[in-house]
Length: 65
Image 1 (cartoon, one colour):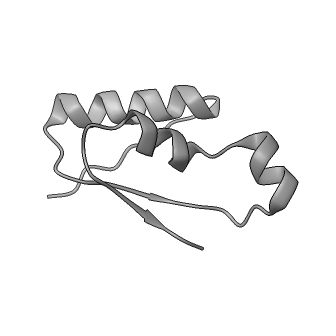
Image 2 (cartoon, one colour):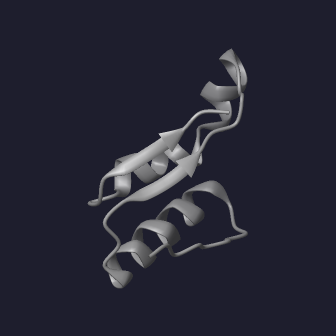
């Protein structure tokens, strides 16, 4: 079974919401995608996927663009 979440919040809040919801629902794997950010943009803006990886106690699969 798959659970889909659509969240609209700043990056860190989305990451916290996703990892929290995954724990509550007993999810086995979080799958997330990335955008094509380059160099300075990536450093300054960070990445929701990176935050999810940092916060998650559940395995995370990141799918590139």
